[in-house]
Image (tube, one colour):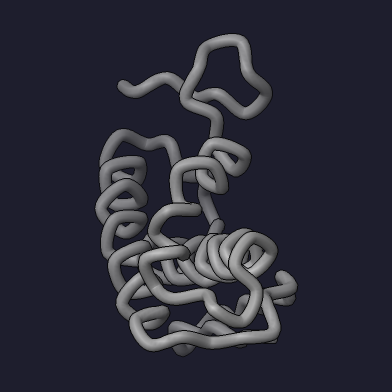
Length: 113
């Protein structure tokens, strides 16, 4: 379990991860959070974030944590204990597509605005 706090709100990410950590996994997490923060700030500017919800930095941190755990779980399922950070990177496309589909008609699809 990871606890994320901005000083006013607390979120808990209890997403299962995997049985192994690898060098570079923190870099994947940091890159994910940076990307998601840009998207969350854009959503905030366009009024697409719900009022009273977590602020963009906390939202991005939570999503980055959840997704990185899913990347690691997918990579571990395929490579077991030989998993390395590039294996996490290879898992990003499929895991992210499950999380947020990019195709119209798919559940969860949100068009770019």
